[in-house]
Image (cartoon, rainbow over all chains, first blue to last red; front, top):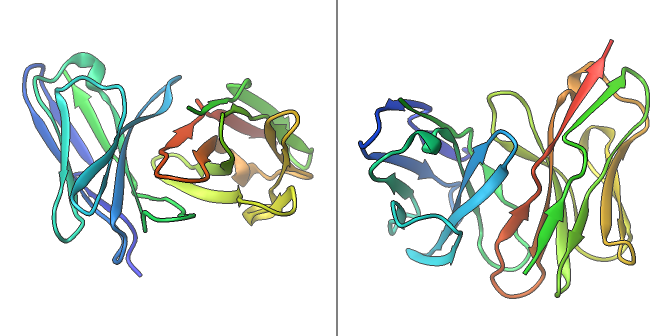
Length: 113
Length: 114
């Protein structure tokens, strides 16, 4: 069974630009969660999508948005990039119901210059 | 709401020595508890989880953790570490009912010394 895949793996952008990251969950998984990981902050929850609907949301500004498609693939978008958005963005998928383990992708390393 | 505290940001330990990584949580509802490991340039991998039942949980790579409800703790232990255990370890909590999100601690960097 293929794992969670994230594209691209590395990305360099400049301030003010926007970026779109993609996540393909494990087959059969309907929930996709996104996290921002920075040194010292650990994993900060961005949002969770389940069956194309946002089910949970973290405390991030509106510049951070996401969506989920009917095949459960998910994208997250960050507009008007700031230097502080440099981070590893992790995607995790799960069945989304009951006791469900999250499976993580390798992440997308975003650098904002 | 739930929260997780990992008090130790870094733990150095010599090879073959025992190690304990501490995790405390707070929650107004029953919770599930998890430990994940992250190797350099990789995503997170589940080490073990507590859902219910026996408070001593065994995971992969020789790790185990004990759920202590009265102390709201879920400390991770290994009796003898290897160089390959060098990684970052994250404790996480999730509400046991409804659609609660996962809450992660800030991580503990375990460095095993030769």
